Image (cartoon, rainbow, N blue to C red):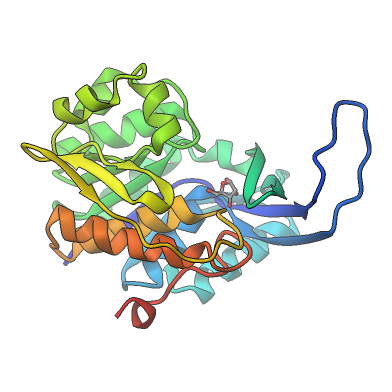
Length: 287
Ligand code: RIB
């Protein structure tokens, strides 16, 4: 079993619950507010580390209180933080989240996450080997992802790219990654509404997640791996839980179908509590 190395964002989520979404120029009353650890990278690292040992995170925080909270939370969740940088005179990343009608709207301010550059990341990969799995998302600079993917190909390290939030993806990256895990919206944008043919073009590589309906991939025929229905409290972080758990299951050498099933189950737990990491499951929950 290899290592899982998450390269990505680590932020603090500032979450408002509301029954009314304001129009431009309007002020409304929310019902509650809380802050909680987030960032797609950190969420995926925590999801993986609750299910497996040997999860490393490569990322950056600011030299503020939020940065210390982010690092403490990663350590408490069994994530190895030796490769996390603290950036002088910079704020930590924040995500400004509105919870409304069982769904979320998110504005991300990357701040220190912009410092997750190829120059900082590549030297840290020297201790990892063929067979390890790198997990990345789109909340760090595109150049970093390109450089890491090239490094990984040269060193036979597998790469799972969760292309969230959506941004245009170079064909070269798509060709080189081992797995690509967009949700339905991202896959429509990435493949110009031709998702069915994209699934056939990238068998066992392209895995499209469909929330509570599970996930699909192509393997000679379309494989639909059903989801698990649970009472929804907060969907924030469900996709991150899926990705972290999928990396763990593939690292455990499960078949792709079994790995997706395991990830669907983990993702279904995560919607049952508040906050991106609040209800992420531990191994004993899934057993
Ligand atoms: O995927 C959920 C995450 O997206 C939140 O935790 C927030 O930080 C945003 O980055």
